[in-house]
Image (cartoon, rainbow, N blue to C red; front, side, top):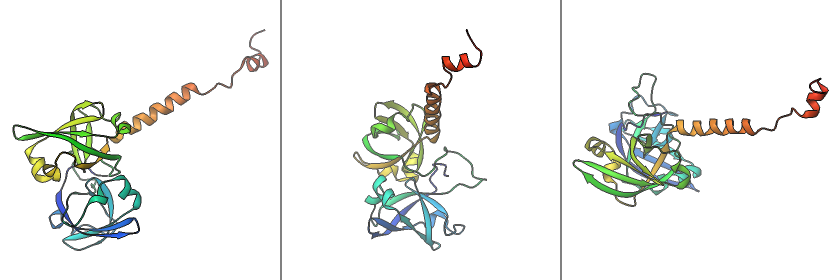
Length: 219
């Protein structure tokens, strides 16, 4: 699990293609890898990957074919900047929101407009994800925990303050840029619970008139 608070911006050192899968190396000296062990999880642009090798300044992670197909990681190349966050600890402050690192889909930057020192960025999301996004709700964009200001149809807009522009790759965005999106996991669980409730309500009853008569109810 992660918080959506980016700890460092790293850089892709190399990308090795392996029959649809990839092994990627990331420079991450500013992340602080001294306490990172093989097998630990690190979120790269919001995608949870496993550390398979490391030094004090870089680490490698394997990317499955499914992850390549469902996220933007397949478009990364040497020199690309990425958001980095290590998995949270029991002592970590949860300053953002609960982020799993399991990307739900890819959105596109629809517009960027300055507002004083902030940026108002609108994103176009795939239709199946739109129902999970609510005004003033939480959403994860390339691993960054953000609050939605405006939601309309398949679009949502967020306010990016100067600190977030400087400490993440969001400041690099241009119109048309593709980003990883993870909706609030609470919304998904609520949908599942409601589906179960509706199923229970429509489940056909085994109690019939014949059964009631056989049990002595009625004439």
